[in-house]
Image (cartoon, rainbow, N blue to C red):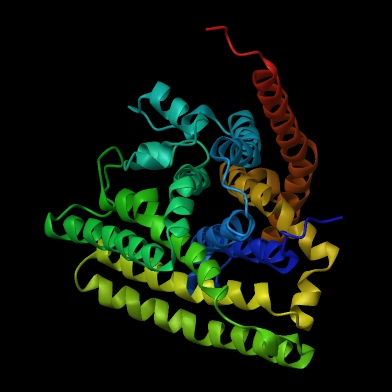
Length: 386
């Protein structure tokens, strides 16, 4: 039986965000055509918004105060095992020269990757070391570290939470503005230097606003009545309208924001596109969290929920397999060019399911049990006599 805190339709949406990233990475390599013009990389931003919404749904809905230690251990157990398994896969099948670039401090690269803190180093040779996509896992992990502070802010009331959110948004803007004013290169040819891409696109400090938009979306909808959505017809209509409006307006709005930002520089472009895109994502998340239409029912089918559950592993392994393909194209000559993206997709699905089934779930359960056992023993020890 699934926990009442689990919103199945949102779990399923995670897979479609991961699929967008998969297509984005295949564009220009295995896929050519219209998808190359779509802002599919924003699937990462969707993950950030969705994460903020879900965590606030689970932890802010409870009358109990947040157990910060337990929360952080449980989130660590959620992401670290699959992250390390993907890292092991990478060093097992890719040549050593693809792990890190020459001149990189290998000890720092390994340590920052193992601790999931490499996105805090705004240098491509570090945040794109080993498994390139894991920068976003690092960024997300920093969000987890900050979540207890978010809970405290929300706990002080809606007004304080809104002012705190505005402050976070202002931080992102100021960071981008400082990059522009100081003429900091966005992504120079020398990937061993400090750049504004690492500060505005990668850094959890800049992307934290998207996570907070997800949190605030959950906080605000608690003050809204959704009684009209009890109607299946109304809910389904709203779901269709939301999908259509999102597809039609998001792409146009995204590129318009990009254009506005590029007038002042790429760093500001990143700020505008990510910040305002997050509001679109939050609206989608709210609709599918609150509506109980036929589309939500479809997304709640076990097949789609399972795809959503393996999406984290899928996200971690797909680019490793793509990089393997690029390095060993002679091994795939038997596959027609048109079939190659589908082959990679199916292979990534199979591998991600196995990783989820045999590593992600068991390791998560083991770490949680060890934590509870250690905590129980600690609490059972008698206090020292005075």
